[in-house]
Length: 171
Image 1 (cartoon, rainbow, N blue to C red):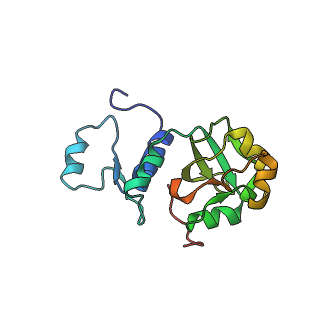
Image 2 (image 1 turned 180 degrees about the vertical axis):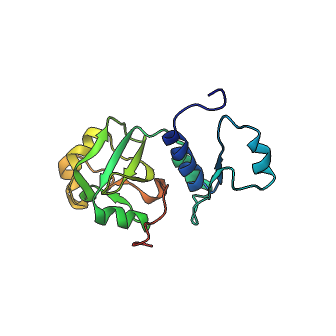
Image 3 (image 1 turned 45 degrees about the vertical axis):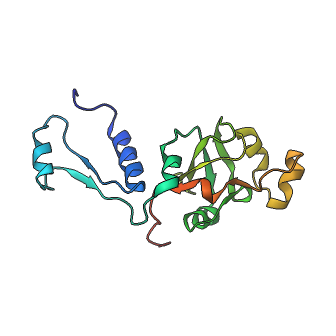
């Protein structure tokens, strides 16, 4: 349409990222722009509104979700649960084919749960090939695999932001 571009999936991802940053998002039918005035007047029956997360990303970590992701790290169930609760991303928690894409050190990646659903974003300490080499490694094995002393974690919790709430069974 003349009012919007991208499909509904793009809009939902944008709403999810805005919600993670503490911002409400409203989607209105593109061919009915007159509804914007109704929404601004408080009407909620003419649109879809996404509320921000209860624990929205604040201050420093907002930059993490603003970076364009260059790849994905797919975590097993235990690692995804731990990261959602505030832990760092370690290589031991990656699924066997858990590194997707071709990213460089210090680029952003999507953090995917065991079902392939994005739940966070983070800035990686290693490039994609190094991360692939580290799949399944414990922290004390990282230097031996890489051949030098580097960070034990793939993504530090200081460089990580959650983009989706905890599932009800984990909350």
